[in-house]
Length: 114
Image (cartoon, rainbow, N blue to C red; front, top):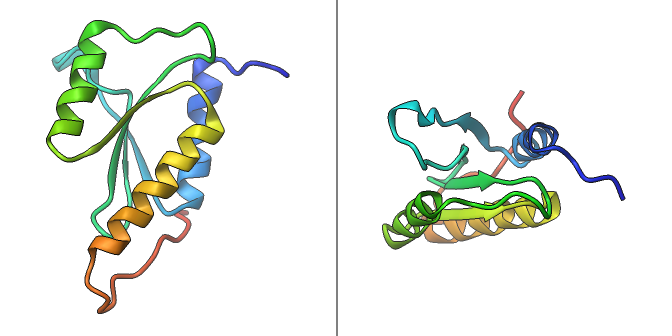
């Protein structure tokens, strides 16, 4: 099995996230080192932060781990991921969680972003 570079992993994940109805935003760490690479904004108030790493070789810094813990403690979905299928599962679970927290009155669902 071919291991994706972090850049290729990010591109594939962005495409998969859009198909689930998320808007992938690349966060700019120049003003705040340690921030996760991506913020995925989805329907029903869903937001997921992800620090992306190359499979098997990427290691998160202590500052990156700190931000993931902080975002999680603040009630956000925040993860360090190095696997496409795992990342998509986390996005799907976050979306389901957010949808179940909405009122049943017209909360809408995920749809592909053009």
